[in-house]
Length: 210
Image (cartoon, rainbow, N blue to C red):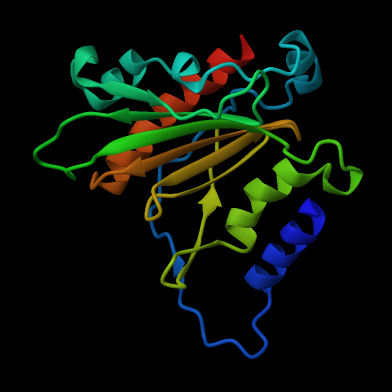
């Protein structure tokens, strides 16, 4: 069943026959060149095995103090909400970080997610994690209004990554096993958003690999 749902979703993204013209947005933000990559080429199968396949809790992998430090505010100003589904071995773990900022949005916050392949037991979807990350650049992400945003390569973390400061989202992966997401609900400038995302991505990746 999952196979047909996924194939149908991909068909909707890639097919344009008979469709109205779709506005495609390219993120024009140009960061400084980055060197090195945290987690690139790591033996992720050994890491997953050592962790017995468990992801842990995103709120623990990304402490609120790290988010506060990246934002330049007091640790006690950041509250967390664990949005991980109940269960001993969830396919993803996520956490929402919120703080008050009169100069930003009323519901300003950052969403963090760590995920594994939800179709790992189906051979035809063994590359799901890899395709999920690269498709952000190849196909883009469609908004509710039908606009498509094409991501750019997120350098410096894992084996591949994609990001869009306009969409406020950052994805990267470790091999074909683990993927991460950081999503902003904020009016921060592209430079500031990108800087914060890199601080959080470094901490999240290193904490997962420990």
